[in-house]
Amino acid sequence: MKKSKYINLNRIEFIITDNCTSHCDHCSIPLEQNRKVINVESAIEALELSVSQFAIESIMTFGGEPLLYPEIVCQIHSKAYVLNIPSRQIITNAYWTKNRDITEKIAIMLKKSHINDILVSIDAFHQKYLSFEHVKFTIKKLIDLKFESLKINPCWFDSPEGENEYDEITRSLLSELSKIGVETSQGNIMYPQSNAVINFPKKFKRKINFNGMKCSENTAANSK
Image (tube, rainbow, N blue to C red; front, side, top):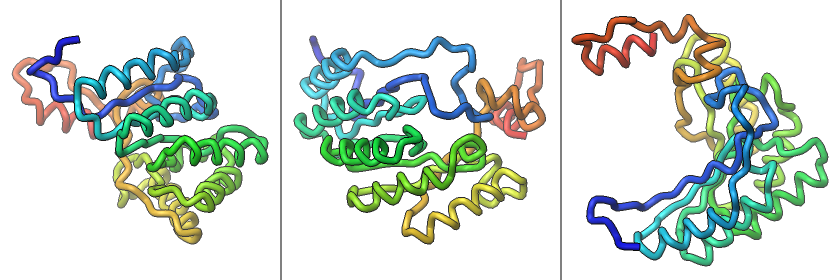
């Protein structure tokens, strides 16, 4: 494969699956979407090819819930470690199974696969459907394993200071987790796609006529 002078790739992100242990009201994956799982051999081949052409600094695995398929996730990250990719990140909701013994085994698998950056999705949307107590159990197991980086990655309805029921619930959850020593990342703001538009139509009001509209005006219209 000939290296293109127009591409300077330094990060690779893998969607492991569209399947999930939750069905969050703000999710960007359509409910009717055909649920699939990544082909691990193809993912590893993509890693090897990318590293041969570019200075890859980081990879990320996410979903859906990637750890519905822990063996696939760990194979990808183990390969990334062998290929000397410095940052090996995963985004998870920390609710992989109801079985706590299996949860602990998966956490150990993650450590052995050399994942060094874990972001846990916790907010009002996820915890509407997932047991917060079980998620806390998972996080405590991850803390015990001493990963290089472990942070909560919330999705905000408006902002970290938002005056609404969703952001208030999220702040309460984060406050509880801070007691066990977990940091919080900047997170992200809910964006207008799929379930979010269906379940929160008043948040995403759109102007129908886009003729002559500036990009900044369009962004403002979609965020009101």
